[in-house]
Length: 469
Image (cartoon, rainbow, N blue to C red; front, side, top):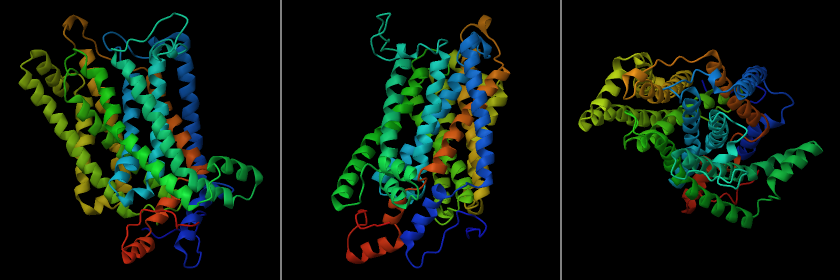
């Protein structure tokens, strides 16, 4: 199953017995090829179409107001905030794979960390759009930033929505720095292999004068370790802050202390599902089966089992907390989720997030790329429904029965949701085409031949200094 296809223009090229040259060729040829595969053009065309619809829908909403969506009272937060929390959650796996697994010396991360980091950045960019549009006046989002403005007004720092500004902007900044710094050695490889002046100049500017000296490697590794240490707390803090948007409210179903760890576990769960969703087509399309192996997919699927169990435990604990609180409003909210008008959404969430990942207990399914892809897509659907259930079921039926209402999304809501995927996949496909989608230097550093040499010489193979392209 993992043998390279001979008709794939990106299949691993023979380069004698030098494994490092093979790795470089296999990854660099993706950007160096004159034309990407036809499937890339098809995917890019679909994504660009969705992106165009997305921009058009946002422009229409800015022109006529957010009433064009299905938002109404009492469900004032609907698809826009559901999409915001969903995309912020998607971005968590990249930082987890890159930073936390790096600090824990999990070498298997090297094959997948680069596009996981890119996924993080593109998901944060997509997520950041929705709060700005949802305020109703998207030309005034700078009011949420603590800078002087013409109204001489300052943000309300006691508002969790204001905390989002700091959490998401910090997370995005650190993620971009971490992602870019990891690519510097690979940009130098692209620069040295470039055959045109424009490409050589572009990659040369991005490489920032990298020559691979021992001094550069030493400073690079120290800085990379420092950024990993800075990024690690963000995995816990960012989605905890997002959960405060709900937990600090008095609304039944939101006012609970389980939300921060519950949201973090769900974000890692959904983020890893998106990583495997992207990894399976990428390894097939660009001939990366020898780099992103079945073993990598199996390890990620094991993470999905673990985080899926945590999410399922959180679902059960929500009912226990509602019962233990003795609050009739809390109890009614969760019974309403089971049997109320949105029961279809709740049971979809349970099926996708709790039942579907259990298939990975079977090794044949866990090591099957297409089963992995299918379950990853199902989990992403379930994680979107989780945010829908949290937001809409609590808002639609609050304290006053006279204010109850059934939220029905409009066609524009669905266009905006689908268009957000268009933005995400457009950015991701451009990244795959023009930037190093696998960390070549890190893959080489943990190549079996390097590890064997390090073991024989009695020291750990954590230094990249002797790895050459």
